[in-house]
Image (cartoon, rainbow over all chains, first blue to last red; front, side):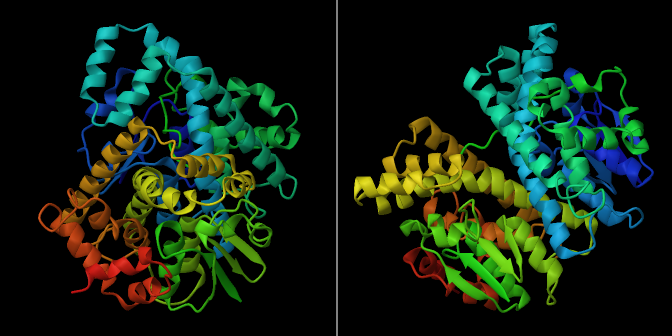
Length: 259
Length: 250
């Protein structure tokens, strides 16, 4: 039996929920309010893989007692567990392409989109709350990376150069997707795959956060529309409780510190 | 036809080298001298326009990104499987590889570049070095090389890297106390990835990674170095960086 602990279906949680619905895998969803820091008081222990979640705050899938983090690797786990409705190509090269996309998306694009989203939505959401509660939650977070990520949002300390660099990285992401779609309707081979789900969950938010980046990306816009119409994507977004999943951001993964 | 473009068996280059050796896959080795900027020369940029090492050419396919190449090698070739059967253990294998690639290794490598890579090239002609930096295709890599060559790492940056390295060592130690191998019951790509970073830890950080403080890490390193594929891979090294691995003998 699978239990998914997630907040509003945006970015990382959206990716895993889409995968579950595409493959029609039964699971129990547990809604966790990340803005109330409920993710730091979940019923499973804080293993290394949970405490040092590269997404800092993200969905957690619990299977037979093992708590798994990192939305792409969770999606891959789901695809390897259930053979029906495969979401990866059969060949080794196509599978390498899916890995190469994931590496690029999650190392470069994910931090950029998360920071732009945090600046726009998390900063005002935290400013509306009692600061003492937030300081208390921060003090209890397990890692320095989590404390530092949340403090940046609390203090609204996102320098202009950082935001500019986020737009540059997001633009590289859009450029790569657009170039890839000139060769095929989908990012890897000729079929919809985990690479499309991964990229959709991180690029679709740009329609709101940096719409100018999509101005010259007609293929990307059409690809986003096509994916948005899929029943699995609609079902995934149906897990929202606020009705505004696209405004749900946490500090997100760290930007690369070195090289 | 399979060709691997690589530097020393260390960090990113060593990951596909050791994976190929473990699988028993024959390949043509194309050594690039990182300290001579071979990876930014036109001949190599024709293979990998990003100028990052390693790259692998298999028939008419060019593969980059060392960790993704490891998965490809295990998927594409016969030989002993280097990914666990259990999907949960495969998830853990991948989680650890990302922890190494994006958290632990960049911190260890920043320290390594400040004390080793920078000083080894810094004495060369300044104009030649500037031209070499200008030829680097990726902005992030240009910044990385500039910092190493001109020694502009701030004390705060290096202190943060030392803090993260210590956390990485602690996490590794905890994992190896809980399970025989990083993913679980079997030797996997995560151990291969981790060894490429880990073999130098007791040499670079002897005060926090040693026989007394981290016995499971030391036992794990020796267990991996005892494998014939590991010895064969490190024998492909040309510098003292690779040959110092022999401290793990016996």
